[in-house]
Image (cartoon, rainbow, N blue to C red; front, side, top):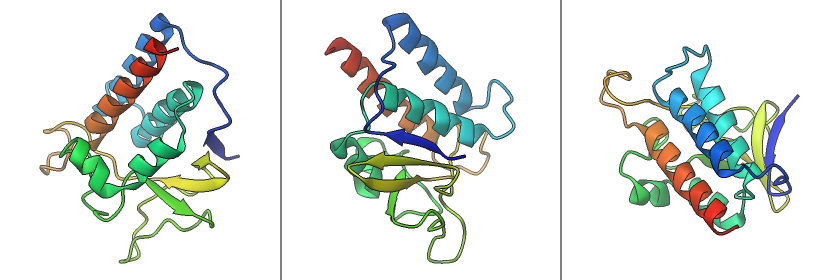
Length: 161
């Protein structure tokens, strides 16, 4: 069954304490402090689940997360080195549109999880990296950059609630 993080979901807005706990659980995935088997999947579930609960699956945020240029402008580590032309999200009509131009899978299948906004489906990137030296190759810490963006957005949403 597919997990859908939607602009229609925002009925579980967290309190201040719940928000801090959920942000901590996302942060624990950055360098896999919980020894999670499929840490990147869990990182995405936790982050996008929080965004959905806070009503932050919006057209502006989806547009930002779909743009490689906007993500990297926000934070130079917020990029996907194996798929530099796209951001976190890819607008699709087909759940299986997961490959890059070289034929490598760079997004999770929409049948597993995706973002839905304004009646459009977006796949979530699958090549996430923690802080060096965990990734060991000088790869960008895009998990940390995305976490920082999620934390900023959710804290602002709580403050403005």
